[in-house]
Image (cartoon, rainbow, N blue to C red; front, side, top):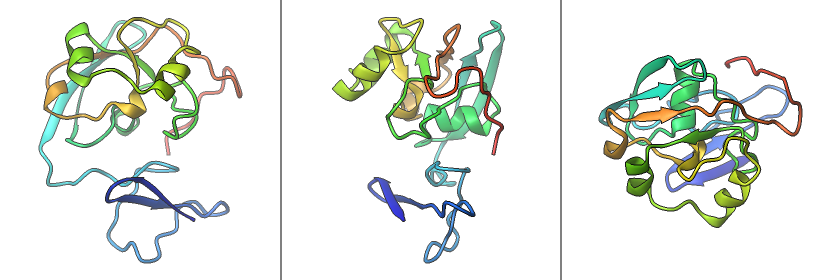
Length: 160
């Protein structure tokens, strides 16, 4: 099965073995159900995660990576249970007021999912919908105090 995620981005999935790559030689994959890595030649952007324990973790990723992908690439505890298919709210993050304005309003679908998230704020977004670029450079993204996975609460996925 080939899934198109955005113009020029595709992934394949073989349920029994994980990713299959026929016809996609040289494409790197982040892991199960993630899109291909943003262009390796893209500008690297550094930003910070304010983690649930109050600590701050600085990450650097290529421009074009989503905040969810950046978290997973850098072992930040951000779930993303629906694997970025815009079907849950477990990748809920909180932007600063200025950053929220820079990224604009979420779509109606994203707002509907955010309504299910605990610890919702006026500047909440889903990390799978926020693309890292110059707007996020040297800024801070906060993780809410908790998330809720309606499928299996308490399960912590292992990095893949």
